[in-house]
View 1 (cartoon, rainbow, N blue to C red):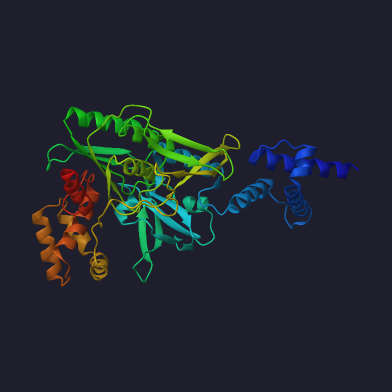
View 2: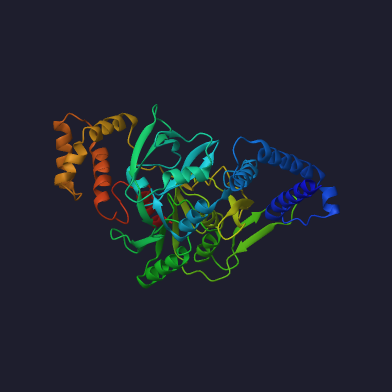
Amino acid sequence: MIKRIKELKIHLAVITFLFGVFFGINISAQVRAEEEPAHRYLDYFHQVYQTIKTNFVEIPNNKNIFYGAIRGIISSLNDPYSRFLDEDAYIALKEDTTGKFVGVGIEVTIKDSEIVVISPIEDTPAMNAGILSEDVIVKIDDVSTKDKELSDIIKMIKGLPHTKVKLTIRRAGYNEPIDFIIERAPIKIETVAYGILKEYDKIGYLKIKVFSEQTAKDVEEALISFRKNGVERVIVDLRYNPGGLLDKAIKISEYFLEKDKLIVSTKGREGTANVSEFRSEIEPLYKGRLIVLVNNGSASASEIFSGAMKDNNRGKLVGAKTFGKGSVQKFFNLNDNIGVTLTIAKYYTPSGISIHGKGITPDYAVKAEEISKEESEIIKQIYKEKIMEDFLKDYKEYSHTTRAKFMALLKEKKYFVSERSAGFILKREMNKFAKSPLYDLEFDNQLVEAVRIINSI
């Protein structure tokens, strides 16, 4: 009899835990009648739990059992953006939203059961190494990523400063996987960089790298600076911006839109009243001409801003189609150290379009600088033979002179690539030795075209 009472207590505890944490449902006779199928499955869960506790060859760890159960529930939703955050993942989330963490600097997701790079973050080891948006990570330190949780992947990539991690990438257009050995580093993301294009009169360039807690304040500072300096045209660069906080995207959109303009709407589960509209509530800080640069690494909050500018005819989008992450996540604390992130809604641009899985097509499609597959193979050999490495021992600053010397060296070694491709890789490598310049009008085709368009509208 005592054993039966104990089992009943455990059964009720399990039910209370699962329903209280995930659904907040008051367990009553009426609810039990309405939710009979769910209770039947909870009974199965209890039976399995009791069987494990009684018969498993080793004493099971309750924490591992329940954490595994929670992960299983979340996994059954088949949504890559809903996940359980244990103690380590919760700390990592807080680091990411504050813009401080140790790793290589990439935003990843699960897409079609594969680990896909949303975007490398500006001025991080991953971007400097050459990781690109839509690269598929197939191995980490020679361990397959197949069937692994996203939280486990993030743990494998992150680590102690100055240790190295090997990412094996599958990239469209390449027959063989590519290995990248990247040194981890403490990463403090400067959310915004800005300045005035010295080659052109009164064009401000504003690079937004991520939408974090600090971003709105940094953008406001940039726009005030532009106004003081008489800037009449602004190019906002959202390329490789993986997104971030929804409220910051809305706030920054307000800086450019007239009051009462629709920025974004969100809609929850079909048949519910979970619909919200977000409109600009202030007068804009900047009213001049506007271009927004986007590419396949522009996701989430970047797409909210881009869609708001495009659909309100506030500015033109230039570059490549965006990533297509149009869902809204909300974090639910389970206690002070763990929680779950759930997709609670999808967002819609002012014209009522959901871009989830589709992305936003720019007004002007412009390809980024590309190196042909044939030249890429030659460049691989240049790196393999350490020709670039040896050259950089003597030359650290990019100029027409150093580019000419590098071209002469390649010809001497019988590696024949175009002068433009040679200059492109040389400049990229030399920029690793110093803070990258704010912009590049030599090799950045999309920025060059943005300047041409903003001068013509």
